[in-house]
Image (cartoon, rainbow, N blue to C red; front, side, top):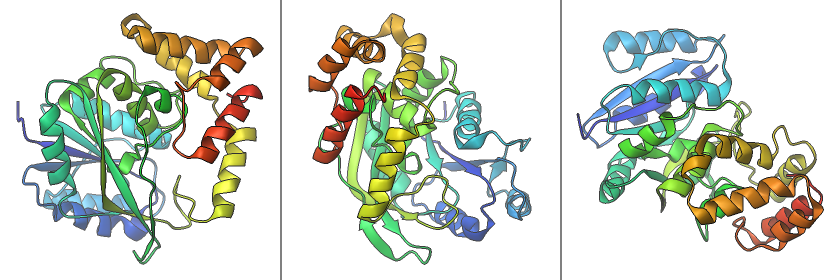
Length: 303
């Protein structure tokens, strides 16, 4: 095994405006053993031409095919491919950010301390505008764990690096389509069976612009709109993702996690279990107001 190789997984979609700047930040990483693997998800701008030129120089490798799978499906294809190689780590990468030069080096140095079990590294974000001017830093989580991962994601994909044991754990089962997004799924699985390392250092300039697939709300009105949208227009219930997780991992869940998962799933069809779940400190979100909203969401059966 090439024990020190890091494979950076990038999914692109109509990203030509900022893509070269992101690629340049990958080329400038201080970590010496990096492979960049790209999959295009059906771009109609000049993204594929830009990638073809980079492939000719040998700077990146690209997967064949470019049918549109959506971000989660595309990243799961990349992850599955990387799992079939001897890479020691994988890092998810968006097309429009800029990485600090020591991002991979720092992630690997922390992950190397947890080589005996599945581990996921993630970090804070320096949220910036189109010109890379800082807007704010993302919030540091107060407590990380399975009870949080069931109801909230604190591991933003573009900051995430997985060790080999985490790669194997995620890919030994079917990579599901019925999940919110690839990074939340990784946080949910690794928080249950491994170690989540959160780095307080913001090592990514997380660019906000009109074409963001997800992005970050940077004002109170934007935050409120997102919370209301999740409450009343959920495209996937939290309980559905939890059931998918249970279907794949129920035979190996530790007792405490098994009981919590069962409580959340039962709450979907029972008011009594909803009350129990709403009063339980075993599930939580990071902010006090979000915690209150979570209890309301549970009681309203919007999970």
